[in-house]
Amino acid sequence: MNATPEQAPEAPVTDLADCVLCGRPTEYPETVRGIVHCPVCEWQEAQRTACSG
Ligand SMILES: [Zn+2]
Image 1 (tube, rainbow, N blue to C red):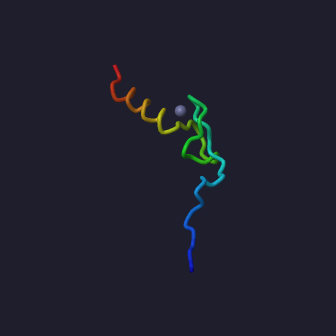
Image 2: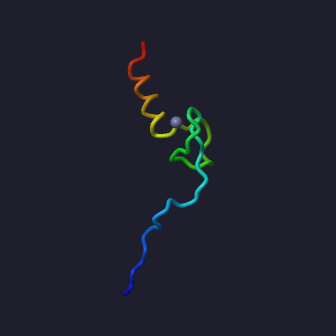
C-alpha cells in the first residue's frame, strides 16, 4: 500500500485575515494588506456596487 494523503481532512492552520465586516476568516492570508472581505461579504459588496445609484 502506498497511499499518499494529498491533504489532511481538516483545513490547514494558516493565519487568515478576518473579514472587516463580519469578522469571519477570509480566504486571504493575513499578509494581505488592506481591506479583506469573506466570500459572503465580498459577494454582498459586489451586489452593492453593481447597483450604484
Ligand atoms: Zn464577511
